[in-house]
Image 1 (cartoon, helix red, strand yellow):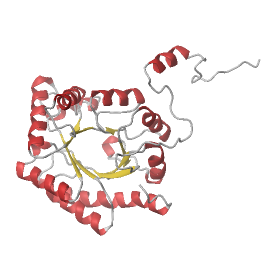
Image 2 (cartoon, one colour; image 1 turned 120 degrees about the vertical axis):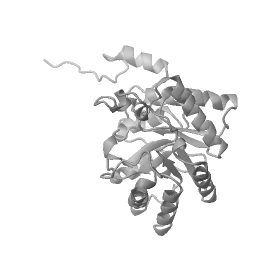
Image 3 (spheres, helix red, strand yellow; image 1 turned 90 degrees about the vertical axis):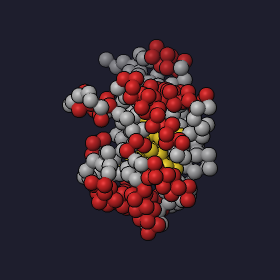
Image 4 (tube, rainbow, N blue to C red; image 1 turned 180 degrees about the vertical axis):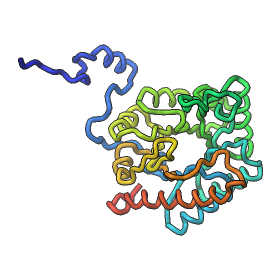
Length: 309
């Protein structure tokens, strides 16, 4: 017997109540059909920018600058994962100075995190989700202190891995306790996987969103339709976050996700956090390779005629 088979996305179909509820809250209720082009842009009109992550200290920063110059690679932001508290004041000041001299955003992770605390959950087989969170009010205070200290040294962009901390820092900006132009970048370890979560993070104060590494173009497009802030997408992701390698998707990532930061780390490489002199050779060699990987990703734009940002 032939029967009508309505789509679950149909506002008058079997999930109408859920759709009505989400619509009432202005939340996207389905992933994109096809690959719609985003009309949103960075304030300077750009569709895309490039971020080099895991730049652990000024020596690695200099390596990145040197390699990018050799490869004529434009990039716009560097980020670091070990945290503000794992660098000396002189190292932070040098990174700030390098950023200003080269017109680059310098984003440092907030240092305290559950995986470095005395608890065991973040180290358990199912505890990865707890890794970047803050355990207890003492750690929240330590994290706020880390941000205030970084701001006093000229840092204007931090990576945040805890929802409560994001709310506190967002409120601090509103109250004038942090500069109004202070950038709050959510960590990839604080998973943003759908439009509702993206909107929540923005409402809490996020300036730029790190998306989960394994989202489809359609899922990314739905998030872009929901929020206006820039999103970060790993073109190549670290092994412990899924190890995606999606270089050929770069043109479409820009098309659907603009304004987007294209991020390039490297698979098959050791963990660096917390970084230090004991692994300085690895820090610098992997920093150089990230730039090489970014140049490959950038070539996907120039090769197919997408030079214009």
